[in-house]
Image 1 (cartoon, rainbow, N blue to C red):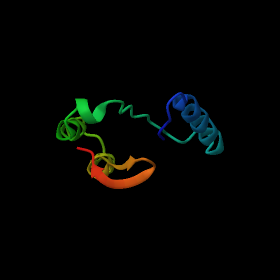
Image 2 (cartoon, rainbow, N blue to C red; image 1 turned 120 degrees about the vertical axis):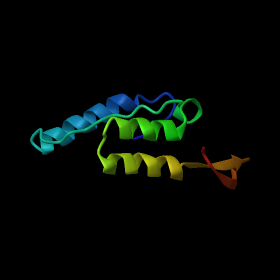
Image 3 (cartoon, rainbow, N blue to C red; image 1 turned 180 degrees about the horizontal axis):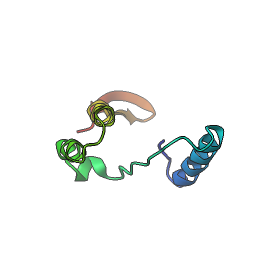
Length: 88
């Protein structure tokens, strides 16, 4: 769940987690991944290697790997989309 500037995303996420846990009778497990500045401060392969060394379940590692590989952003100039680039 992403956030916008000047928006307290953690508060909304906590409320969502609480509501889901109550709905599922407290049998739902959630985790938070803080990726602030991750794209320019942590090598993606290093992150995958650490997750594998920590023996994080394969499906979680695969999800993170897909998320990192598919990340991109649209370039907009004067309210007109001028292209898309991959975030590496």
